Image (cartoon, rainbow, N blue to C red; front, side):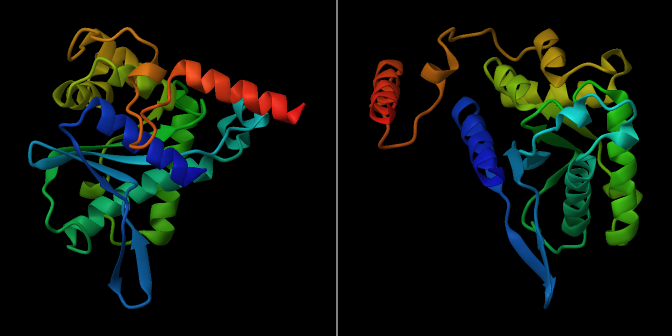
Length: 238
């Protein structure tokens, strides 16, 4: 599930913002027997990497969504580990363990893309996730310095899909910068920030199904064809 989510996000970005080069997660070993993996996606634009993305497909349980306190919400450690992975990637690049051939932007940011509505608008849950991320850093990331703790934010995948429809590489990067730093946008979603400062007007009002780039070999797939396939499957199962 997690790998397919990463593939989907990479396909989205490549389809809507082909000017951006997507660098996928890769394993590396600074020492024999010590193995790590880089961030799920690093976005390369204008000769530098301005954005690191971790994709989290884990669903939030009913108890997590309606917990009375952040400490009672289950599954936050998984999101905290995603933040920690971004920080560790930055530290390991600084130490020349990985991506030594890439230039990381001085204004580098991190985004945790989620498949479910975990913490995109809850300051209480976000604070708990960052607290847990710092705990993980204390236990597993002695090499991570304060300069490696780049700003990170949480984005629901549906919001990211909507944002890309009117984005350019520069508008996406600018929106992330405003979202994570400008006090006017404290508590906003990234999608809302970008809506106020879009890169281009909507140029295609067709449903996402029609605009989404289809893999080679599947150009035949249209809404009508998809409906026929669904009907055939329903008929064969009855």
